[in-house]
Each structure stands twice: as structure tokens, then as C-alpha cells.
Length: 215
Image 1: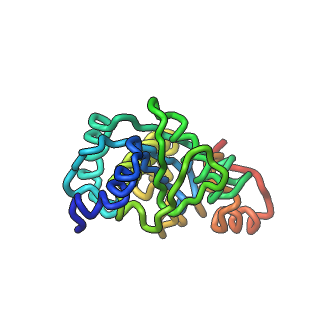
Image 2: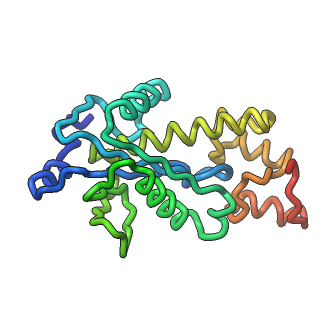
């Protein structure tokens, strides 16, 4: 696991250049068949350290919850952007992820002077942006944003599970697991599904109807 020093390489270089309010930004939920894509934006203090923080996908649920609360408590500011399934179908998941990131940044109470993203270019954006491949495992700020995004989205799926208990959203979080695909085949998609995603689209086409069950 990378050390805090390793995880602050990009931030430290930007601090040397005179930037102080560096925002890390990341999303969660590109792959699921149902639910929103969620982005987190986080500005951490210049001297901030948080041992063990890394890409949220590499952390246990318990550790994510710990870091989620810790980051919200310690951050200079954090923001959350949410783009629903309908919009994802309209503009595609890549553009929806970018839109969620911009929304998350706009929710910050303090305007950043530089943005680090996890492999998401933002051409023409009002702030300078550096897109870092695997940024959530290389930048402390992006890792923090990934935790905010992941835990927020998981909580949304847990709430959705209360509304539609037979789909077991609390277990698979909308990802196309074998069990989820079985439940989708059995019950059909709700209005919260992404109808441009192949498993959902194929199911509707196979049934010869675009009617959505369980509205």
C-alpha cells in the first residue's frame, strides 16, 4: 500500500506552484444497471495526512464508512454530485460522470484553484484540471473523493432496496451480478434502471415491449 507521502505527490507539486485549494474529484457507479452515478469533490488541508486512505474499491465497507465520516469532518470542503439513470440514458455514462463531477465541484463551499480527477478530462472547464489515470490510487485528494462518492451511492442503493426489496439492491448495489441478472429477468426493470445498458435493453427487446414494470 502506498504511503501518505506517495499519495500526496501530485498535491505537493501543485503546492510548490502556488496552488493551495486543490480539489480531488472522482465518481462511483459507472458499471451498475440501475441507480445514479455519484461524484465526490474534496478539498483537503495542505498538511493533511490520513494513513491507509486509497481507492475506495480497495477498502472494506467498514473502512469506507470510517474514512467517509473522517473526511467530511476534516475536509476544508466537500461536495456531492448525483446524475440519475434517466439522464445517463440521455447523454451516456461517460458524459453523465463528467456532469456529476462538475456538479460536485459546484457544491463546494470554497472554490478550488485546481482540480485533480480520476481519468476524467474536462476540456474548456473554468478551472485548471489534471486528469490522472488510476488517480484514486495515486492522489490522496482523489482517494478521498472516491470514498465520498462510493459511500454516498451505496447508501442510495440501500434506500432503493427498501423501496424495492425483492431486487436485493443492498447486496449487489446495482452491479450486474449473476443474482441481480436473475432478479431482473424475473421482475423486469423499475424506472430507476438504465435502459441503454445492454442487459436491460436486451430484456426489453426480448419481451417485445418497452413497458417498465413496477413503476
